Length: 170
Image: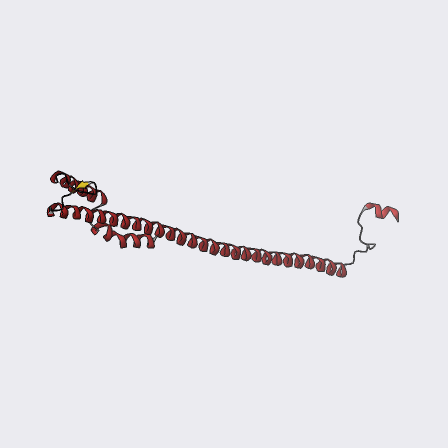
């Protein structure tokens, strides 16, 4: 975008100060040609206009018309070159924008991949801590059960009556 603006600003003075536009030069040429046609009597023809060999003013007018034609041709060539440069600048600007966007997309993809990796590694770490906590909890319950079983004797004694049915059997 900067390149397109720079190119436009570069050619702006040429467009402003390059002289009159082609339509103005064409109308001036038509006026001079009409003036030449009106001022000349019948004699030899140059560009379809009869010019006697002894009339120096008409010859100069014809030369001014030729110069005006050359100026019009140069102006049109210059305008064509400006248009082509503008198109090339636009193409370059679009290419630069596309390249920049592709680079940004690649950076975003890399950042997304890295963030996904971080999230997955955090999930694995969380799973490790949860598994370790579960194993510790189950192990502690097992050790407590074994400890209590070794310290407390669950064999029934005579003084200890669990139910009235135990007394009837004796």
